[in-house]
Length: 150
Image 1 (cartoon, rainbow, N blue to C red):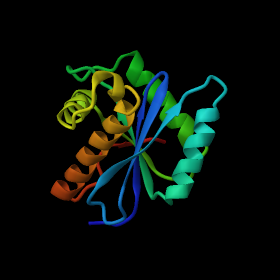
Image 2: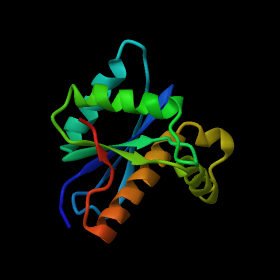
Image 3: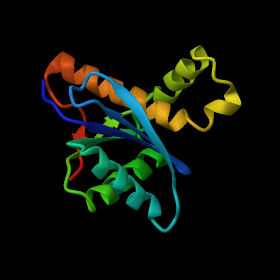
């Protein structure tokens, strides 16, 4: 298994959840919630976070429908990933994020977080679930999951 910090991003319309793993690729941890702005300041903030973490690669969630079809949210996630790719020299992969938010809500509920308190961390929690899926798939198959953004 390879080593190094990976970053997972759950990009939403208003907020972007960020998670990271340890360099041994065992644990996924929440990092930050970044508020989007129409001027692109969120990309600068994300680049700072990624640089500080000394990441080796980035995984961006692809919110496909349960049928596998891609809608407006998936297209927006692809545009976001390409914009990020144009500003950083790290590999970026799109990975299926279906049901990650549902799982994140369940984890937060089990941890005793109220619905009101979940709002501030749900995007980070979704990014953690996304990264856990990535790490597990990589352990199971020996392959890096996802579709490389070009």
